[in-house]
Image (cartoon, rainbow, N blue to C red):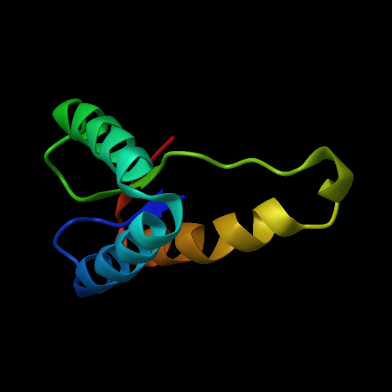
Length: 88
């Protein structure tokens, strides 16, 4: 689950779509817990633009299929091109 730099146009559109869908599927209680998590992360995040990887997991039965690489590679490339930090 990547959080894009806050200033980017991609971040605002992406966040609106993804979190709106999450709330619709997971419900208000889960969304409220997510909001608390996001606030805690934001309180300890650096001021400069950065990508943040909150969660990355692969089901044991799907390991070694390149799924994590498929999620990581595009953002790593984009961050490198833009000179933006990545935070685990």
